[in-house]
Length: 223
Length: 223
Image 1: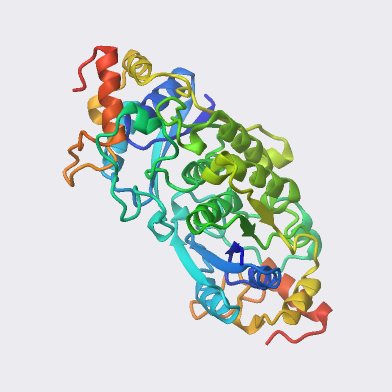
Image 2: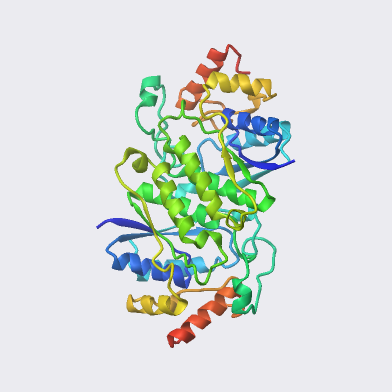
């Protein structure tokens, strides 16, 4: 079976993305990145998710983005709470991590070259993260073009890299229904920018609010 | 003065690149990456170089690429020694690190966003590293296109990122002469893929051989 690398954070979207890659007939190689995020307890969840969705391999790379800073997720900036949908739609939030998806996809590309994969999966979504520049189709297309200049296989013409973002235009409720149809156990995932040290979601950050709204709209209990 | 981020390994090429960025009128922000390379003692050299070439700031980011492997520089694969120029020209060497420059430029881009820089400098060169896909102009152009989709400023249209590779078509001898004219102290640099723990170059890897040939052709002593 062809191989695919999936960026797996341990959150709801990336777990669903892993399930989609498996559905699409790939042997799945999951990659998590410990970049110093506040919510790194997600990484524990990623292990559970990779195991229960049958990933062939799951690697975690340590990268200390706190040395660069610039984001509420990695620096000493407060995570915004209790924002309305309108407020979330306004501009790029402070939880944006500079160049994050460029870096994460770069790592996924390196891992793909090492294991002989040509397909990269990312749980990017334009609806919930409309403010993040690096969740948009134009960004993902530019990365795909880059990947084919950046690598042995791309330059030697022995393979063509593709970036897949199967959730890109789905609502959170649609993502949840899709994941449940593919056997994702969402109780194994965590979607919070600012969880307690024990991994209890704050319930008030953008990510918690979007998750709650998604389960409500899908008429499914988040448990 | 405008700000620029310079990828600084501690080797000869990146030191020269830093000096060029300064000559071109930028306040320089140097970024080194400890990616688990065998030759990480270079990072000590990077500190000296950044200081003596007047960098405003020098940060080092830790990224454990050994978790991905796939290269003689980060995995347990021997560094080739005593290769002739012909042998070096043949294909992509085992010292190629999968997707390395994609990842390094991604980190430089994140740093640039954080400090408000729009110019990224990298010491890529097509002559000495003809085998590395991610040292070619087409790769650097693709990264520049990506950067303008990947970032706040790119999407909001408040600035345009540029990737500079001022050494791209210079011979090693030309690079050395340029650096000396700009005050680079090459005794502070190290160009070896496999130095001793004390930082003594092996004298036999591709990087050592190219450096020696460059100083010879420039008729300058490497001291």
